[in-house]
Length: 281
Image 1 (cartoon, helix red, strand yellow):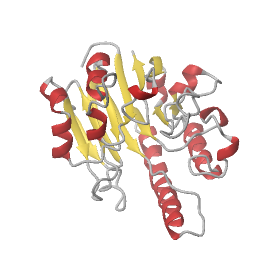
Image 2 (cartoon, rainbow, N blue to C red):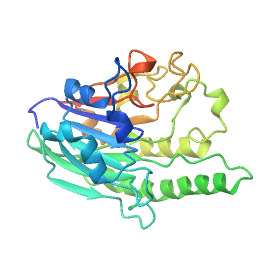
Image 3 (spheres, helix red, strand yellow):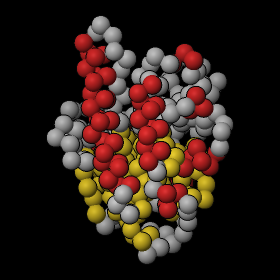
Image 4 (tube, rainbow, N blue to C red):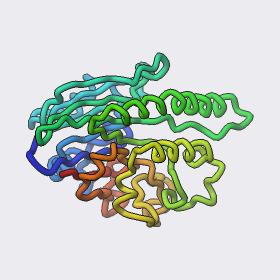
């Protein structure tokens, strides 16, 4: 690990095989971004592949010295989270003690030594959920997300009280405030912006977790990191800020900057999410 600073990026790759492929002459995929920006740690969500397939897709990066820790979902082709790092992690832990969710590829954490201290970096892919309707599938997805929040909240409380330097980042699938979603009025009844979801994030912040990007950027719209592939959402910057870093207070105090690596054109995107990076001293 480099001496200073420490850069931790997070990105939902929307399928690792799709993310690394060359899409057109102007879009060589994820690997050149990784090589050019070279963060110390990259938290991945929606890998959607077995570890063997993921390692094959990331082979050029792994051959270049990157390390990969990941957990795939027991449901083939779904979820999956991973952590790429320039140095080998001192420890890897999968899941958060949930009998329902630990084998579904939604949470992994690693320890790294940095400036004489241990930093825990965790990748999270929180269920997208659904707005409950008459469709049983919507009800099932809604209830799944509620169960995840009910279990994961106390785990985060425990991390916060552990005294460790921790960053939990990823695709939270919840926009906390009206500043975090462009069309908030039209999404008030949609999953990702439902009152109980926003209250859950608010409770985490009230307990002591710090949304470092919001603290850094202040009371502004966005910056967004997810845009629908459909229509002109990307061109109009009609996005959501659902990809972010929550850190323990002491680590938040060491934040230098945070930014979104937004593609400069629609056809240069290699995921519907853009990487979000945070740099710590």
